[in-house]
Image 1 (cartoon, rainbow, N blue to C red):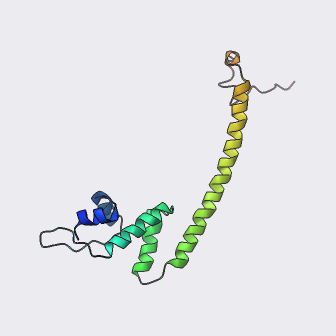
Image 2: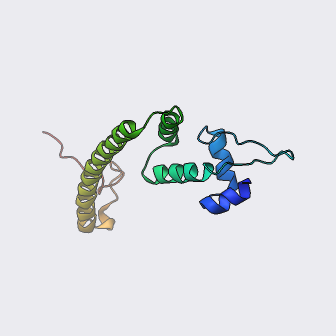
Image 3: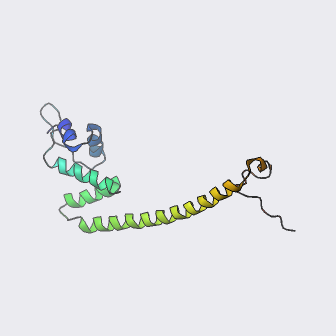
Length: 138
């Protein structure tokens, strides 16, 4: 099947398919006598896997590793499980950071609501909301 047909069937663009070839995610397809790419039927489910793996948050490098395992005849399930757990751990870490940031922003929003913009002329401070004046020690 030609690249345009594969693009239509997979919902991807021809540019994306060529990029996946260059990135090592898709094997180079055989060529017709006229030099056109002639994709085998297995190209369509491979592209679907790449798309689904990206939607799950896997990087192209991680997807390449999964495909390499499968192409070598190994079942990649254990490797995929490890990747999923790593991504879940990273999401938990990022969510904790976002909760801290939300708390800090809520505190700043409260301070902003209580701050009179007319009182923000102190040349020693850039912004009283973000960095309030410190009490000087005696």
